[in-house]
Every structure is written in C-alpha cells, then in structure tokens.
Length: 408
Image (cartoon, rainbow, N blue to C red; front, top):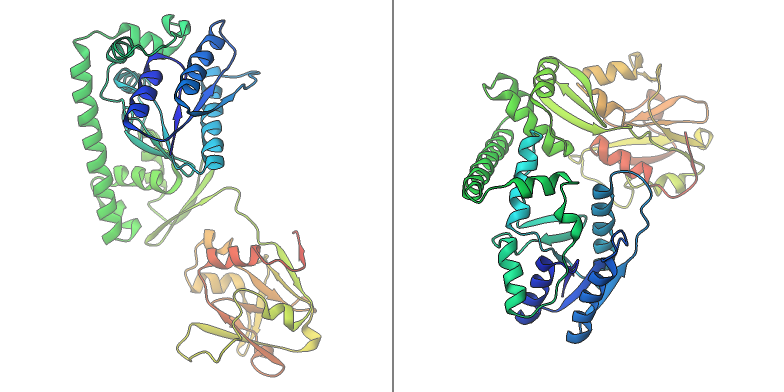
C-alpha cells in the first residue's frame, strides 16, 4: 500500500487516476487549509473519486495563525502524511510534483544562490522514516491537465496559483518555453558536479585522516562537504574559507548549532548543547553490577580491553558524574590531575565533555575509563570489570541507566 497526497488539482488527480488504474493499493490524504472559497470544492473532488473507487481517505483541517504560510503549510501537510503513514503501516508517500515544479525549484535555488543536497527535485527522498516518491517529474503540467480531460478525471484549479503573490508563481509565469530544455540540461550538469564532489569527498575521507584535507588543493570544498555530511548544514563560500583558516591548528569552533573541533589529525562535530552525563548515585554493589559497562558474568581473557576496580563497603554510595575542574587521582607515583591524563592520551575537548569518573563516599575519584583506578582500589573487597567503550557510547550508556539518578 502507498499513501498518495492529493490536493484535488490536475497534477494530483492525474496521479491518483494513474495509480488506481495500475492497481496500486492506495490510502489518500488531503489537506483542506480552508483559505480559499474553492477549498471545499477541491476536497469534494478528491472525496468523490475515492468513494467511487473504494479508496480509503483521511482529511486534515489545520489552523493557521502567523508566520510564512507556505513554509507552515508544507510542514503541516508532511507531518500529517507521516502520521497517517505510520498509522496505516505504509512506508511510501507519492506526491504529484511535476516538471514545472522541478524547473521552478531550480530557478528558485539559483536566484538565492542556495547550496543544496540536490538541485531541482529528486525522484526519491526520505522524510523521517518515510520514502517520498515523485513519479511525475517527467510530465509537464499541461500534459497532466490534458490527461485529466481525456480520461474524464475531475479536477479543480487553485486560483492562488494564477497570481504572482508567491515567488514560485512569478518564476512559473515568467518562464519561456525555449528556456525549459536549457534549464533541464543545467540541472543535470549541476547534479553531476554535485555527485562528483560527494564521491571525491567519500573517497578522500575513506583513505585519509580527516585533517589531511588541509593539505589538499580542494581542501575548502572537502571541508564544506564534510560539514554537510556531519551536520546537514551547508556553508557559504565565505563561511567555509573562514572555518578552513581557523582549523589550520587545534581548536574548537562554533558553527550554528554545532561545535567543530580540529584535534591533531582528526575533525569532530558535536551538536549543542553538549549533554552532561546525569549524576548516578550507586548505593550497593548490586547496583554497580547492573551498570551496562560492567561485566562480571564470566572470567574475561587478559587480552580483553578491561580495567578492574575493587571497592569496599565504606566506598558506597558511589557517584558517576562528568569530570570537574581539579579532578585527579592518587597514583602509586603521586597525585595526577585528570586534565594531565587527557593531555597525555591526546583526548579532544569534545570527547572530554562526554567522559565520566567514579567517585566514592569521601568524594575522591577512584576510577576513570581509559586510565583505571587509584592506588587504593587495585585489590581487596569486590572487584568489578569495566569494559572500555568509546566516550560517546559510555556517555549514552550511563545516561540510560534506569536506577536511582540525580540531575546535575
């Protein structure tokens, strides 16, 4: 079964008729914004067709308040499609975007000098967990109107499309017939270049440390692609050049809702805000044994990346928390700061924000992953084996502990 978004216009009614004639099992969604006098007419066209052909249908009547209507309407309808698709157990949504929409989108992108994941419209994309398909991108709008008339498929004309009130309408009405093949070739060329750039970046980062891009002639282009892959954001040429300059040495840069860090031969990205580990208070050895990173179910081979911590009853309650300024441990050779451990092990600042320490009742740090335990907790009492995880995995495992937790 597929979900079909149908407005009642010639494009979506032609698609509905085509899919029904192919025998596609359909569930139709219609959004009535009740913004035009003819909105009810369009809903009735869709409803009558679905009733006539035994197609299930759902209608949404959203309430608009303020802001950009076009952006709001797009978000509302796609959220509605996703919600209905999940409810019906459907994985694919069909929309009736056609060649005119493809060309308008590309001209819109060009006018605003937009950096895009794709120029024009893609035949298939994803939104949340749904596949969005656009089967009509090879059809002109006039061809779809002609289809409806030949096949006696009713449709309504949205009169708001006849004005130049919206940028897309202005682009559509100003487009000349001879421009169409030129624009289609331009779209094809732009997307081939985009794919080549993405392939170049994929091959480069597969074979090199990420920071090697700073020695490449096309380093800024590689950086812009890497930023997009990590964050989903595109940078302007000016922003890319400035970030490229800053990342020539180890540093942390703020980029919109992200932190970008250069640490030796690595580049890392972390979204803001950096989530602090929830402080977990552990009252008993049984609770400690239940931690996801503790393994006491079997004797572990000596070659396993495991560190051991021995605790006495007087150590409880233990606390797991994020590192704090001044933290350190008493080692056999004397006191050592945690900050020194991070420096010696070349641990980046973003990774440090997701580290953790184990503190005993006296407030002393007695265990740090990757470092081990202090000199008083090598032997005696009950011994626990801590597997080593990446900092991000450790962070997530601690964050999801379900027993007694205290928010920092």
